[in-house]
Length: 457
Image 1 (cartoon, rainbow, N blue to C red):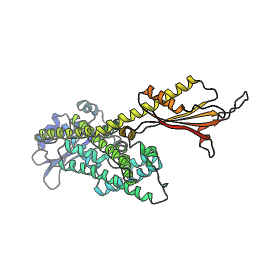
Image 2: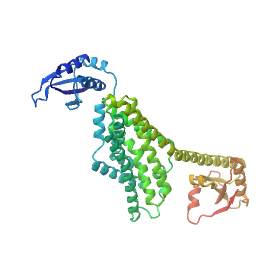
Image 3: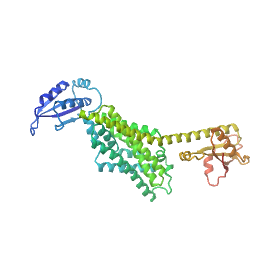
Image 4: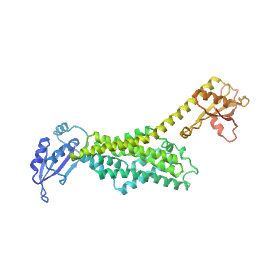
């Protein structure tokens, strides 16, 4: 429920109260004893979905923008007459006036915005380097990116060019600042003992996760934008939804900065693409939802202009997403290729090894080295096979080549096969000892590991 207070300008009391009577609104009128520009104040309750309708009728009755209209959200309203109002104004959407006020509140002052964003980036970068999902989520609570994303869309829908411009500028400059902050932090940390020398950031799962963006990333961004818009329109959970929006933007921005700091332009580029795609998707979903919810400018004469501006903006954003989606499509396709090939090779070797029924020989591991960069560059997959054999077991000298030919025929493409052997001791006791961890044994100093060549099919 909302409590609306309106100062009635001189000479308009009759028309204003008549408009409220037509809407079936219960009201109270108080005499105004101020400077003389107003003759009374009227106060009335109305459901949130009815505020916009009632204020439109009051505007037609003579309440202009130079008057004072205050909309309050009371804690509790006790009355049996409320059910009639709720039936008259069904729905959960707030008024455009309240939406505009909330959008203004969400976009903080520039100094506050950049202070929180930089601190959030520092925390997120630390979480990435520590491979700590909890730290990254904690950083998202601090990030203030929901405000600019929502205010840019609200400004477009309500024809406030200044709000739109400020929202867009804060988003773009904020994310650039996040990338630079992470890059500077990465450069500084490399000169300290806080991270190991020659650290491979691609080996950190939280970093690697954001260097291979695919189409699934769009669902996070679109869902975050829709959730943010719904939370603002219905006044619930906006803080938690802001975390989801920040998750889509700050961690990949920090990853892009780390790519710059560690001299890995590929990481910097792919993470930056993920940031930009998510940014566009969040704005696209917010714009669409506010438009479909029926928000319009206060002045009806501006509606056509806003609609044409909205359509053009939606087209620009959609084209931008489509262009950047080429990168997402490439990553999605190559990721599918690498994983499918790895599964096919492992299944093929496991099946052939079981069919061979080699007594005393154990297949320890099968791994496939085939990255996205290998797909792009046309490199052949490397298949690494490790088996355990008894000391006196005869090993075919061309085993690697045999498996190379069989795998090539089975999957229909050339591979490189590398076979490693670990000498195994087999007990003659009837009750076997616990199984030996062969991969760990092979990695111990002094382990006897032999390789059957590095052959190309």
